[in-house]
Length: 400
Image 1 (spheres, rainbow, N blue to C red):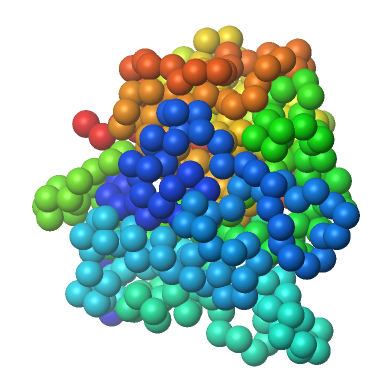
Image 2: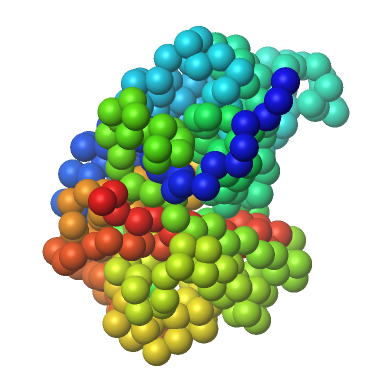
């Protein structure tokens, strides 16, 4: 088969599918973000966390955290919703529709499910069909399907790969993103790493990005999938264009398995590369959705990277982290936060950082705190930084 010539027009977003703590539709998420409604609460996983206060942001749909099979079900629901929102029929699209799944711990979930079923499997990934193939089969996607693992930036890297597939003409349409679910082993692992918040006060105040009293992140679940396609194709079929994925930047710290490096230059390179790819100067950015999860080291490292990448503009470009409301969706965080950026572009309002009562002086940014901020928004940047030093920045531009 002869591959079509590479696509040169912009890659745009024409579909959104969400499963999240803040709601399961674009409008529900927008309402929750702009109302400052947090989903963080104390939950009971039922096993494995005796004596430990478990703070989390579970799915809005009310499913029980930790239930076997939820990872596949939640991802499938978001993929199907994204395709429906874009009015894409997978079977009509045939092999020209691709799927990129961002998932950082699929085999851990497989091992945990086997253990809870009284199994004895030690090595995983050798028996079950990969999750991405199960998703493709379930919705009828006949084109290329692949999983990208980049820890907490996984679903963002999935969007970046999908964009490159479209730009090189490998596919005509691609659905990309990822969702995460809370499980006892994941919660215990992050707890033992001392990455989770041990907040002793009101649960809703536990996730505190950039705040002086932050003490770790609060795990959330869910995520999002986005449908991407060339702008010319979207216009021909009369699709609703939500925004363009105008720029992508990636880098690696290569500093430590779980702790961000103290040198802000590697992460700043990802932001700088994304802006250059989009043809946007630092002062042309209207909003930055920060990765900031509420960890002592990570938030300071990101503030340094933003300051270095934006230079003098960092004093005036608004920054917020929506993790204060949604919790940290881990593999699904980057795609969900891209949806938060779409909300800012659509509603012309910036979501605030929740619980930012005393900004850390080591994070000298132009914080959006307390209340949403109405302003003209045309260009937004979204940062995602994963364990192991996987750095990503996406630049989204408002649809003309």
